[in-house]
Amino acid sequence: MLVYVLNQYPKTSHSFIRREIRELERQGWQVRCFALRRSKEPLPDPADQDEAQRTCYLLGEHAAGTALRLAVAGLVLLTRHPRRFLRAAMHALRLGWRAQRPLAYHLVYLLEACQLARLLRDVGGRHLHAHFGTNAAEVAMLGAMLVRLPYSFTVHGPEEFDDAGGWKLEEKIRPAAFAVAVSSYGLSQLYRILPHGEWGKLRLVRCGVDASYGATQAAPLPHAPRLVCVGRLCPQKAQLLLVEAVARLRAVGVSMQLVLAGDGELREALRAQVARLGVHDSVRITGWLSGEEVRAEILAARALVLPSFAEGLPVVLMEAMALGRPVVSTYIAGIPELVMPGWNGWLVPAGDLDALTRALEDVCRTPLADMARMGGRGRDIVLRRHNLAHEVRELGCHFERSIAIGSPS
Image (cartoon, one colour):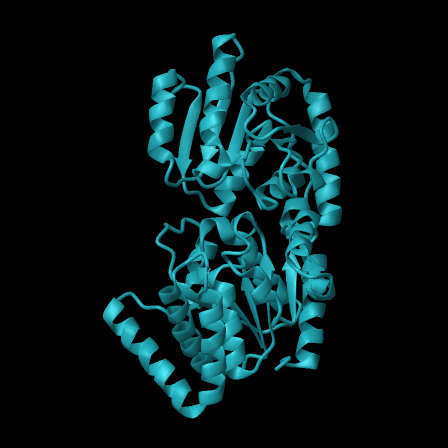
């Protein structure tokens, strides 16, 4: 039995985790999913709604009841296994020293780990795996210490890499059976953090694209100069810069339609900018969409554009390329491992409005036959390097070795 430990789950932007879990199950694994809390975002995708029903949450809706459950779980662990509890407590205190979050948070993570440990006995978990190297990885690490199980986690970035010391990545990797990076760039950042003697714990397992994306021939590109940007409306995705580029092109007579597929904290700021620049008839904000609705928006577009300031390696780029769509993105993180300028898309320096504007103009002026060839090349790369079944099988092999060896403590 594998046990996944996550923070807020499911979320619209974390569908790749759901696909990973489903593929593990298809390959014969039993997987139970524990999340610290429910996401407050809407879940338009029925698959995410179903996933929420499958997920067990450590923290409830009511603060008082949750606090009591955590306190009882901590007291039970302290009484029954005092040495394990004190060892985990010492680790929590070390992780809380000069950390990204105050010490009180880490004491709460310890109690969450006690609650997780109680539930693990019921399901018979044999390995814990977390996604992202933030608080879920800490809860998984402390829970693994309490029940003497091996654990691992996948690091995506950019948040963990922005403050690797504050998130205590090295301290989380040391007791782990292994840690996973999703790109060569991510692997390089973990190499930077760890002493050379610890590099053997690192694995490269890429995110995979669902087989349905490559099951049929790519749909023809539309004649209309329509672009789509898929992702949370937030500062790091650079949608404000993208809208400004659209306004610049419109001012010189280059018309296009831009669809911002997603929602988030920048929605009102984007609406205000669209109104201020007078491009309300060129820019549409959809709000949260289901997976099928996102796919439909990508297929209706000539290209996907993602001018991010910070990333790991966005799965939406893989999905767009698998659907035969060229992409426009930035020279950051793992993106150049996937996008090759002039071959399957465009890359521009992050934050360079002039370069982004020129790339969008190129998308509008490039003949459709050339665009289709670029899309086909991208599709070939993604279906070869980001095959979900293959990548999950690789991850499963790491789980098998970890379970065979058992807990390092």
